[in-house]
Length: 361
Image (cartoon, rainbow, N blue to C red; front, side, top):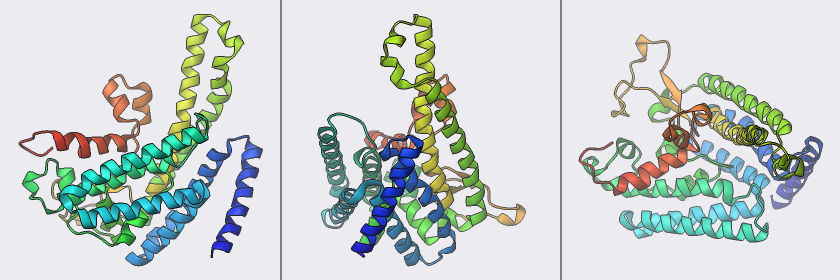
């Protein structure tokens, strides 16, 4: 298996290198985009795998292979060892201690990866394991640990309806936690959403392949739009020109005008990446969120006899509204819609837990 895997990796690496040279794109970015394109194709098969164990094995293998393409053996070793350590903490340290220990451990692990990368790359920036997947893995690990801590609490003592809905009452097998980490780049999502998705429980009962494909194609169109905008604006207003002698000789008004569009083009690059990731999650169906009449009663069945289909929106893993970031007037909207899943993690697992609340949010 190792020989076959290495042979496949060598062939894929040569294909990625060819695409990178042909399209004049950085190799690390091309490698990541290639992984995402493949993941979209593989994601669609999830809708036709009904057995829980089969779905877990299928996604574990795909996740590990794509991680290997994107980050090499280092990525797999880091993510697998962290999954094992987190699982052991939760099993043997107990609910009250494990969350804090896992928070400290993952922060130290991420810090070590970033320090090593900056030393290795001599302070340059590239798409790396620490910048992408492990940053969001930290979000997943710690939110899962805090949800496990909430598992034996009375609902009245939990400070958020969101936390009540996602608390983990029983520790699952290590297999679950290994798979949860095999995403390529992110974003963050709750463990119970993942578990319900694997088992077709909760609001995922009403999800259909038609819904996932329809919404995924919509997100694909948005991804293409931002990619085209990035390509056009980045070529017309290259960021590298800001350090050129010609730019320094321009008047202040031209400098502001050029800087504005140059920075916008650079942000389009991130919007394109965010949408490609969210598109994959939509195609798998894990982003699906059913709209219920009473959002507090998450297990209440929806009466679908009076409507053509379930009312839903694709929200889980949503990175934020790019239009509000670009054109919003309120600074709060701009900040909250940039990498939204990190903001939600800060809200539910940091701020709310330290607030003294009489009623849950």
